[in-house]
Amino acid sequence: MILIGIVFFVKIHGDFVLVSGDTVSNMSLTQAVKEHKERRKKDNNAVMTMVIKKSKPSPVIHQSRLGTDELFMAIDPDTKQLLCYEERGEHPRGAISIDNALLADNPSISLHNDKQDCYIDICSQEVLSLFTDNFDYQHLRRHFVKGLLVDDIMGYKIFTHEILSSYAARIDNYRSYDTISKDIIQRWTYPFVPDVKFSANCTTKLEREGMYKAPETQQSRSANIGPFTVIGKGTRIGDDSRITHSVIGEGCTIGSNVSIVGSYIWNNVTIEDGCELRHAIVCDGVIIKEGATLEPGVVLSLKVVIGREFVVPAYSKVSLFQQPTAQDSDEELEYADNSSGAIDPSVADAGNKLNGGIVSESSQIQDWSSSQLGPGGAGFIWSACDGGCEEEWRHSVAPIPTDQLAKALLAMEEDLEIVNVQENALTPSGELKPGSDDDDSDNMDDFNVDTVDFEKEAEATFMRAAEDNIAVDDLILEVNSLRLSYNKSAGDCAGALFYPMMKLALESPYNTAVELQKNVASVVSKWHKLFEVLAREVDDQVCVVFHYISFEILAYSLIEINGNELFLCIVHLPASRRSR
Image 1 (tube, one colour):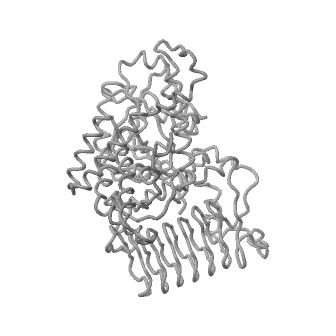
Image 2 (image 1 turned 180 degrees about the vertical axis):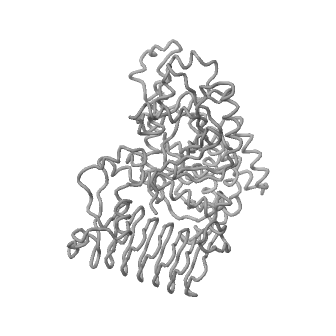
Image 3 (image 1 turned 135 degrees about the vertical axis):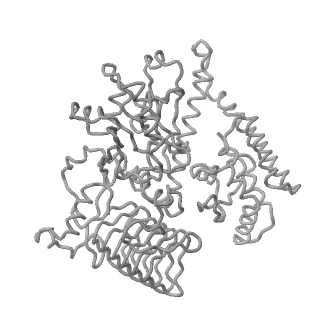
């Protein structure tokens, strides 16, 4: 089923809980409801309590692991009142303005860009009245929440409740669909996991390495099912096929020599021999003919047919229906906002019609002899929305491409250089220093000296630990001491240690690329606990891998950090680090 934003209400003694229908959570509402009721007794204007949780966005792409834009919140640290709510996507340059009155009226304000909105709200009856009075409200956050925050007449207030150990996240784009699915498979959402029976569906059995298998599946002995994979009831898998980090629905037929990686295959899908699927979504009833390939980010709608040996380009969206020429008015709704990467409702509507068998005869009879999808194919490739081609990767189930990370990293460094030049060019009074407009190059020589010193000291610390065979736990203590003295994050430490680790692997004897790869694996195997401790967040792990992305990659080794598989690259290390 394609998820569309749906709102439903549960009444709780006059107040109610407002939850987005695409939210997945195992949290208990008891404490949040209790706090809301206690506030209401003291202040009738406390009409909403918003559930939030910590979420560290990537410093490179300013995007959370759910594919959502970096969120800025201003919160009163004492009362937990929400004072400001802004998404970075609405401010392309990243500058957020705070009203002077907000600063004057609140003695203390805590600013955050590390919070995630769970779309779970405890509301009073006034919220319903406000929606009735303001019939033009279409977005719960963009219109309703921000409307209340700037309304000085009614005086209504919104407060926050932060959860620490519970799970809550919203699926409103393909990347969050992928991320939350992986969290479910890795049991972060317990008891909402595949092997716990909640309905009449058959019970799925948890096997080794996070693999779930339903009964009545047929798997060839030569087929290889990798970790963190779900296989649905009645699915058949042919000879020498390889499936890893994927979800396969019920009643699917998968031929021989098929490779499926990081993909979501829904029910009753047929994949013929020799096909390759990488990080794709395949909906019910799709047929993929022999030798076809789905490149990363592809989404196939219901009952599409991919022709023999056809290669579906990366990030393509394919449907049996031709792409509408006019924008659907429903796209004004929050759940259809293309800017947030939401799943297009027109595709869901097409799927519902196909499943229900109510497609008109004229629309069923289409000329597919010249199909865009190769010999025997059926369907149409939809073009990206206006201005959306460059951003398809942001909200895809596919990993972020290395070239996009490199561009984002370069842009971030350029922004830092501009900020540094501006700061160096100003006196404490705010006036330009003499000659500063012509001497920018001199200022850049001293750019981020502390960071360079920190990285050199981190390198020396690691190389000394390697020579003296110091225990990993003792090295972690030294690195943490170094981190505090330079006021760096754990992710900064992990990134700084990546360089000497690769240097150590390169300095070990080798004659071939295979031997070099073994060197990498050996070094990583011995010191991988450093990354388990210092790079717990996925975004930190990605930054570690691409810390020196401009270097030439010679070999790589696959490691696992906190349940996430990463490629650690062996790189050509020049005599000095790349110029900043």
